Length: 189
Ligand code: ATP
Ligand code: MG
Image 1: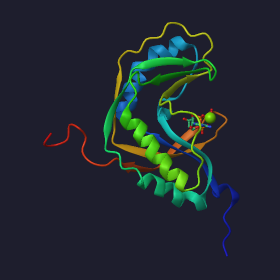
Image 2 (image 1 turned 180 degrees about the horizontal axis):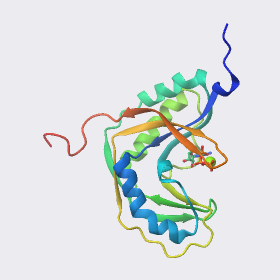
Image 3 (image 1 turned 180 degrees about the vertical axis):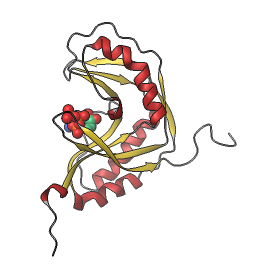
């Protein structure tokens, strides 16, 4: 008999929209000055993302339910715009959020949680406020402006593992699921 070592038995997981490299670079470029003006501690560019569902510590044995929840999602690919810088005073974070709510993003969130509930996870009580965290420990921010709005084309979402490290969280994408169908600019439209 082989026994699993305890450290392999569970991992801290979340679902997210994960930017590809060009989008990550746009995010970095558009927010660089604002992050500096915020006086906060920048989130490393490789960590930027939009969280869809935070699961916390998940036993390896429960991973199948997590994957089934992802398969439950039937939302087609969509676009949304991140164009609002905000400081959330209680969390002391600088975030980038959509100024106009995205119906498609809300549906993706809701479909994902439908499946997660079926798999036994408790849906978050607080409303979904999609955002990218740009900086933490923001105390007395200066005037912040966004160099350019971010057009995000969501054509997939990811299951990500968070590894707590004294130097800050490290994220590893475990698996991605494509969103269905063609984008509004797909062939023949
Ligand atoms: P650290 O906790 O080390 O400062 P972090 O918050 O970036 O780093 P995690 O706590 O693993 O890393 O969180 C991963 C993602 O899930 C982040 O986007 C975080 O904002 C979000 N998250 C964490 N806890 C919750 C929670 N209780 N509810 C909703 N989202 C959460
Ligand atoms: Mg955290």
